[in-house]
Length: 284
Image (cartoon, rainbow, N blue to C red):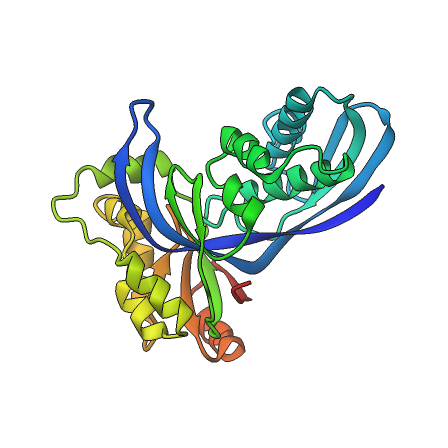
């Protein structure tokens, strides 16, 4: 069976860290929106026993057991007890990595759903969520892949109504950030500013972009701004662009902006910022 999948990214619209579990996992409260910026997964599942072969267009992406697709493949067949199929998959990456956009988790979630479909929906959705959570915290969201309030360590997903009509522009600088560092620095904050998640949800439902924007805060960005010089300098640059409000997605390093005039603003931003990826997209 030949397959071809669009594996989309996400943005975090507000992010509060609400606690930490004994095992070190952090508890979160945030809104996540799927966006149209996507990778492509294409390949073939053969009706014979075999192994997974991964190829990709990016030289720095591992294609062995370190790849999230391999982890999904291994876990699916271990959990199901089914004979492992021979599968070839090519990953065409467009979503920037180390960006807070969830590209790897999206790839894993879409591949997991495709394996399940091939095997006649062997697992129900709750079991897919459980498998996904064991591999990556954002995978359950991408299994649902709808605008949601996400709490806990990523497993508590409540779908919300999103009627936002604005375009979304993603700006990815030529550096990544350490998620571990973002969490570590967050604990150094004396006065965290909390996102108003309820107001964000209301704003998305009512297409009230002004309410959404004034309600967004990100604890992880606040932590990085304490000492990450790359983020500090980059944020100064984006905040210097007039009449636009930029927000970090997740632990970064990508920022996003809502705009009514996406095509025009993309060209403007490209003129203002050098050495950045700039992507025009929309919420799904």
